[in-house]
Length: 86
Image 1: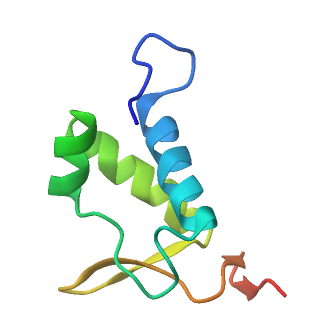
Image 2 (image 1 turned 90 degrees about the vertical axis):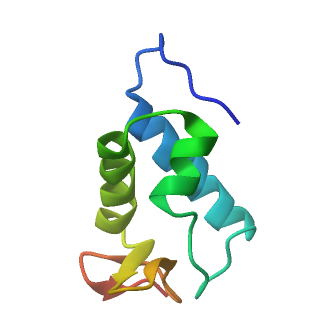
């Protein structure tokens, strides 16, 4: 997938939407690592700062969490505001 650099939606939001769709579709299942910043940089051709913003969006949505020294992983149960969604 590619991003629209000329569109009204910032690239980091587009990337967050792409990764979110992959999580929701199950191609990145719970407990699995999302692509690293290096991998995402190669895929989308954007600065790492842009990718960090995209990952922050996903963290803020409760979809992913950082595991120190390991990477960013899809959470088992998405949360909103720290509460489990059932």
